[in-house]
Length: 430
Ligand SMILES: O=C([S-])c1cc(C(=O)S)c[n+]([C@@H]2O[C@H](COP(=O)(O)O)[C@@H](O)[C@H]2O)c1
Ligand code: NI
Image (cartoon, rainbow, N blue to C red; front, side, top):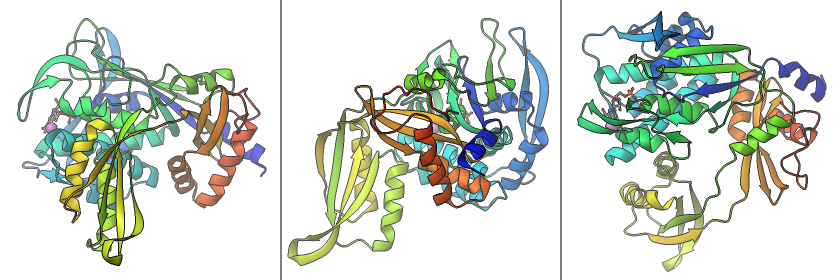
């Protein structure tokens, strides 16, 4: 099959998902929207059962919210005294479950975001974050079922509307919390949000899901809408329907696709902090975990360079790039997780290209093409590697093959170094 035939064959089988969280978002609302869009409750239940067998039962019912029909999904907890679970324990459950690989990866990514945000808020490492009793089962069910539902809809790229967070206060486990709840606010970084009303409209779990499933905030993308779903939240307030809406279908060809990519283009990054330490006495087997922990704790990047340091000792320099507000916590993490007695902090200015992500139909799915552009010209073009890996796993193809097809798809869509940006639609926009 030629690339052209592969692309044509996949144009109708890979879907974009648009999530309308303009009235807020929670895990149960997303599940309701997915069931409303046609995903079987049994599909969601099976995914959850593979992670926490016999622990929860999902129930769906038709309800109205401010006069609009919607599907409400409830998560009934079946066990009498459910355990507290750390993120480490939950990750082991997800890793050990019989889940499709894309579902496992999406669920792990969403939970990692949730644990990372809770960890930053409470000043502990993500691994130490405890999900309490019923909350742990509830969150596992929401996250795993939502990821399974999105996969079942055939979605390979998603965008989200500006998100309503709410206002006021809520009673939580540790007393009264401001709205947006601290973890919700943490999860909102980099996303378009507004208060949008009173009460808690977006929960941490809902935000962790949409901000890991979707690649950015965007108005309605250019797509052919094939399925829609409306999911209800618990409260029914008269002033605005407490619902999440979703729409899924193939992205359509045309200049609008590139226009959308422009509208959710990555933000220009300005000031940053570089933390560095020369370390000669850490067991080298520990380094991968240290780097993974720093990334999970909010570092923009963390890496090592081999050096020959004082006294002729082979050693490593640890480099951690961070947004200024995350630097203090990351400095503490470096002290806690390595053997260093100190570190250097340097204020750096990052000169970055404007970025945009354009979804293209590639070999049975959708891969976002990351475009670096400046002054109306494309300078860098790179398939988003995580999308390539996920698609390769889904199709059972070698990553290198999918990468080649994805790299070839970009010039065919008029996206190549030196080309004008926004791109003139070529032969192969998704
Ligand atoms: O229990 C804890 S630690 C807790 C922390 C936070 C922070 O924002 S920190 C928020 N909450 C509230 O718990 C409920 C359930 O949230 P889900 O995401 O599981 O739906 C919600 O009201 C949170 O704001 C709890
Ligand atoms: Ni908390």
